[in-house]
Image 1 (spheres, rainbow, N blue to C red):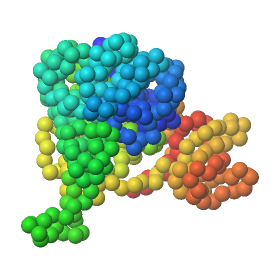
Image 2 (tube, rainbow, N blue to C red):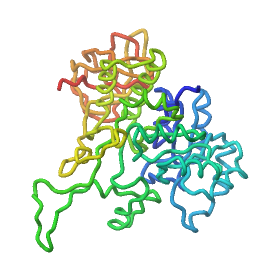
Image 3 (spheres, rainbow, N blue to C red):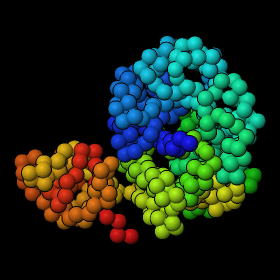
Image 4 (cartoon, rainbow, N blue to C red):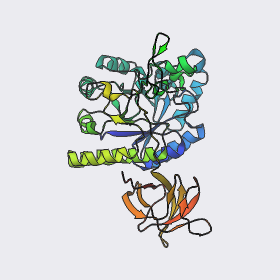
Amino acid sequence: MNKIELLAPAKDLQKAKIAIMYGADAVYVGGKFFSLRSRASNFSLEDLRELSQFAKQYGAKVYVTVNIVFHDDDYKGISDYLTYLGSIGIDAVIISSLALIPMVRKLAPKMECHISTQLSSLNSAAVKTLQEFGADRIVLAREASMEQINEISSKVSVPLEVFIHGGMCSNYSGRCTLSNRMTLRDANRGGCAHSCRWKYHLFDGDEIISNPNCLMSMSSKDLRASAYIEKMIRANVASLKIEGRMKSEYYIGQVVKTYRKMIDEIYHEGHLTQARLDYYDSELSKAENRPSDDGFLSGSCDNSKHLYGVIGAAVTHDYVAFVHDFDEERNMATIEVKNIFARSDELEVFGPNVDNQRFKADDIYDENWQIVDLCNKPTQILYVRTPFRVHRCDMIRKVNKR
């Protein structure tokens, strides 16, 4: 049995490289066209080529989203695009239109076709039919329970991909038209305005009946499936998918590394104790800015899974610096400031080769080697002495005292 794949999102080349370095087996990204998440930076043709080459150095795969809901006018240029993706070694395209399958087979026969969650596949008959059309993998709808995932997996032979972390949709994935109706931004063509997360007054006829201090929202809590990873491995799921092509490098690094270590420990030990699961949950919480739960996986969906009348997001500033280099003779890290921190703050370094090592930032210098007491200029390059070796692309955060 092949080891389950950990699949991570990225909105640009830097974040895709971070995902791979931090342990993703594959990344999914969008090009400048034919992709949802149009507000992400997304990848130029040259970026895609560079990413494909970079991924191969790590034995990782690259999947490109071509998952808009196509109108006739949207097909212009698609043949050239698919041909190019095949020529640079892209491993798969994630699609929502079955019309692309014969095009991929003709133009890029080595490239797989993965069916997007936009098709809301929730039963084995649908999965088998998609396989008959030529699909190489099916991304199940996020509305599937663990019991349903088990049942579908037991009845089909095509590989299945399941979301395990990140944002949920207030409607069936890919079938919401709130954004279209309210902002003329088509959610199914890459323009979702997240209208479900807005705050609304409630009316009884012409009378406003909502509390002005607690307006109505339709937002769902984010998904965190850490407690189900073992079950998904036993269910022979092929790929575990993290949502978040709009997310930061810190989110990508922290979430990918945590699931990477969790998956590896399950395979090595055969089981996670409750204490270890609690530890991994605490690590995942360091990257959260919205409440989370297990979504539909438990098979129930009550009001506790939604954020009615609740402010759904809170920005944290724990992530304070990105490591660009390290001088072994001086034990001095070259860092880029991301958020405010001060000299003598207790900090924590994590990265592909560093596991949550703490230190006090007693020695911080600017480019003129003057002591810095308060680091409050984003993107400023500083030098920080650390009592242990750090590496390029490690990240530094404040130790959370809460």
